[in-house]
Image (tube, rainbow, N blue to C red):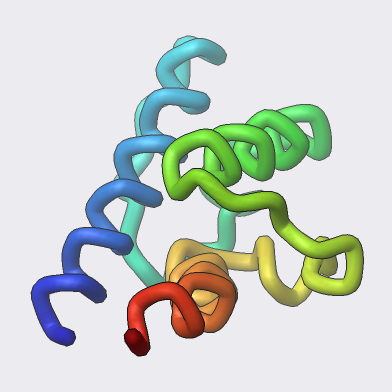
Length: 90
């Protein structure tokens, strides 16, 4: 399970860094860093949400699209793991 968690975290960090690069920004993207503090705007958050859906091949339920879930890489990681759990529990 540890490898799965690390893979999810690395994929999220890559998505965040890609969005920052599009905005000509660089930041140290740590799991606990608040995404707004490292430079993501509300439009970037929408792009991140779409990127997460494409990267992990699932639709984020409306109830999960909350500021709490999009605060940091860590909070995104938890939400994604929860959404993918039924598929990986088999």
